[in-house]
Amino acid sequence: MLRLKPIRRRKRRGPSRDVLRVADGAFWLALVFAGLIGARHLLSPSPPVAARASVELSVPAATKATPGATASSAATATPVAAAHGAAAAPPPHPIIAIVIDDLGADAVHTRRAIALPRQVALAFLPDPPDTPGLARMAAREGHEVLLHMPMQAVTETRLGPLALTLDLPPDEIGRRLDRALARVPGRIGVNNHEGSRFTADRAALDPVMQHLAPRHLFFLDSRTTVDTQVVAAARARGVQTGSRDVFLDDVVTIDGVDAQLRVLEAKARAQGAAIAIGHPHEITLDAVAYWTAHEKGFALVTLRAAMRRKTEDSLTLATR
Image 1 (cartoon, one colour):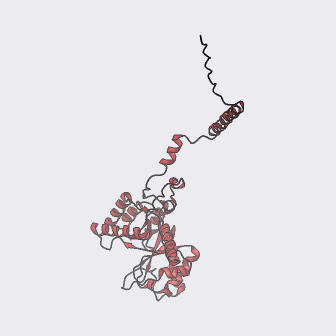
Image 2 (spheres, one colour):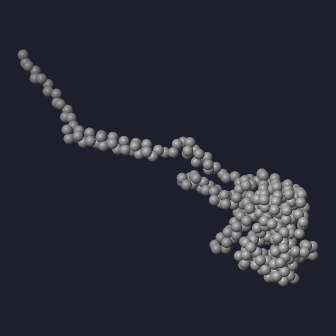
């Protein structure tokens, strides 16, 4: 009987002890590394969801201009999303300033003008008896107050005893300006009433600007003539200045004023800033009150802010 030899099964060779030691060391090294990462996250956690949401909600998709908005807020609004690499926000809204002048003679309509948003600048004639009290009221309500200075026109117009005319010597121009300025308390600037002849004469304007410069008063050119020299004369004396873009009520009808408001908006879009002058007519005051309450896509700003913006833009264009 043959004895079968037992079948020898070959044993599989397992990993050597050296390999096991290396693998074991790698495992513990990985475990320690993972622990360090977890500890760092525990020490410096990411902001809670509520905090992140508050940051996102604080940056609206589009900034709506309101009647109370200022030029600085419109010009400096920078979305937080841009800081995190998101798309930049659209440029600031165009800015608009509105001036109501010829104030003081009609106390009822002057008070209506004072009731407009405080960004609306108010310009007072120096002669009416009620001017000082109404100007003080306007300043208390936060409006920029201007002296609406009568100046000689091309046509013969009765402008009162303080009007500036071409035949006056510089000393008399200064005296009349001082008397007129004293009649408008709280004034921070001047704009011309009429003046189509006077403002076209650079020599006549120079003593005006020389008088305003040390008093730190600005001059808004009402632009009653295409030949105006106001801006050049003002800048030569270091007087802050700007000029009107639109008269709101050359045609005193609802359609007429509404059409001019559309022109004002178009100029603001094209230029970045625009300045309008209106008068204390019932229709104009109604239209301005409605526009300031319902406008969209524009920022109503103070006159001084609009003049500064227009000056900066003109200087930028000049240096290109």
